[in-house]
Image 1 (spheres, rainbow over the protein chains, first blue to last red):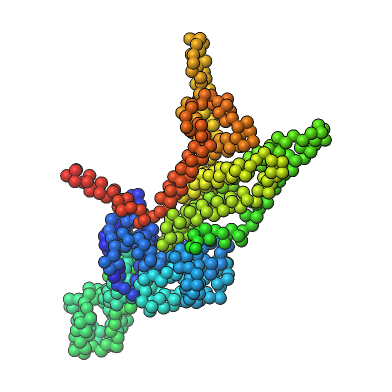
Image 2: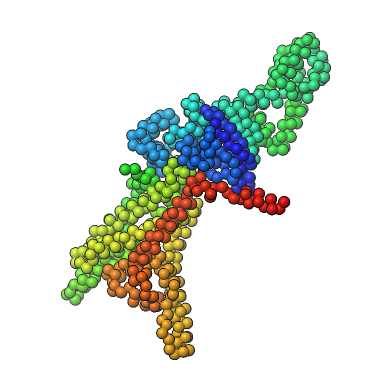
Length: 320
Length: 318
C-alpha cells in the first residue's frame, strides 16, 4: 500500500501541493487526473525522490520512502513526460547503461535488456541509434528503461501525450500487461477516456488537493447518480408528470416529445420505486435509464472554473 | 572490475564522435609546427654561425610544454563545463538521479572522461616532447613533474568546469563562467599582485624620500599567496626550474617585490600544486553536493525550515 499524507510543496508564492492525501493499494493501476498546474508532476517527482516536500510523508507499507532513498530508488521506476535520450547511443547500449546505473552488469544486464525490449516490442531495434527512433518507440524505450530494475511501482507522467492513436493503443496494452504482472502503476494523463478503460482506480487533483479519489466503480456510480434520469413514456404522459412533480427526489423536469428528463437525486432504490409508482398508475413506460456519464463530464464539473461550473449547473437545472 | 557507468558511456559516445580525432589532430599539429620551426631555426643558426646552440633544444621543450599547457587550459574547461548542464539540457540528469547510482559516481565519471581525454592528448604529444631527449638537458623526472603539473591543472580546470556545470542550467553560461573564473585565477591573481606591489612601491618611495633611510622593501604582501592558486604561475615555476634560470625567487621578486622567507616560498611548486589540488577537490565535492538531490543529503538538511519558522512566527505573534 502506497500512502501519501498531507503532502505540501510551495514554489515561491505558488502552492503546488496543499495537503495532498492519497492511498493506492498494491497492484492498482491508478489514474492521476488534474488540470495543468494542479500538482500531478510535482507529486510524481516527490514520489520519485527528485523533489523534497515542504511537509508530509510518502510511505510504502512500513517504510518511509522519503527517508530511505536507496529503497525508494529500487522500488520505483519513473517515466517522465520527456524522453531523455542520448545521441550516438544505440538502444541496447542505452538500456545497458541504465542497467549498470542500478548495478546490473554483464550477462544479467544483457538478458534483462533483451527481455524488456521484447516486452515493449523493440527487440528488432536493439542496434538502432536512440535518436533515430520514432516518438512512440522512444516512449516504449523509456518504459523499458524504467523497468530495468524490476520496480514494484511505476510512475508514468503523461505517457501517451503526443502519440498517434495506434501507438497509444499499443502502449496502453503494455500497461495492462504490467498491471497483470502485479505492478502498481500510477499514470498521470489528460486522456480521460483511456484512463477510464485502463485504470482500476482514479484520483482527481486540483490546486494541489485531492478532490476525488476512488475505484472506477465508485467513480462511475457517482457520475451516474448525478446524471439526469431519462424516461420514455408511451402513453398517459400527463399522469406521469403529475406523479413526477410531487416526487421528493425530482428536482427538475424537462419534456421533449415523449421523453421526460429528470434531475433526480435518489439512489437506485428510489429509481426502482419511482418506476413501480409509474407502472402502478397505468403509465406505459418504454424506457427508464440514467443518462450515461463520462469521466470528462465529472472532470469538468470538479475542476472547471466558476463559469464552466455555472454553465454545467444551468444545463443540469434546465435539463438540456 | 566495475566500470563507472557514466565514464563507460562517455567513452562509447566519445569513440563514435569525430571531436576527439579533431582535437588530437589540431593539438599535435600545433605542437609539431612549433617543434619544426624551432628545429628549422636551429639549423639555420648552424649555417650562419657553424655552431650548435644546445640551449635552443631546451627552448623547444619550453615551447612545446607551454603550448601543451595553454591548450590544456583551453580544452579542459570546454570538456567539463557542459558535462552536467548538458545532461540537464538533454533531460537525462533526472533519469540518472532516479537510479541507485550515487551523484558522486556521476560527477567522477564525467571527470574521468575529461581526464582521459587529457591523458590521451598528453601521451600523444610525448613523441614531439621527446625531441629534447636527442640532445639531453631534461630528465625523465622533469617530464614526470611536468605531467604532474599538467594533471593537477587538468583536475583544477576540470573541477571549475564541473562546479559551474552543476550550478548553472545552461551549458553556454556554464562555459563562459568557467573561462571567466580561469581568467580570474590566471590573470586576476597576477594583476592583484602587480597592483599591490606598485601601491606598496609608491608608499615605500615616499617614505624613503621623507626619511631618507629605510630597510623595508616593497612587496605585494599577502597577495603573493594568491599566486599559489594560479596554474600559470605553477607552470612557470616548473619550467623555470627545468629549462630556465632555476632561480624562481629572483624572478618573483623582480615582478612582485620582496618575497618572505618561509616554507611556502621555499617549496613553491609543491605548495602550489597542493593548493590547486585541494581547490580542485573542494570544487568537485561542491559539484557533487549541488547535483545530489535532497533525499540523499543528511537528514538535518532535508526538512525545510520555512514552515517551522512560519509556525514559530505565528506562535510569537499570538
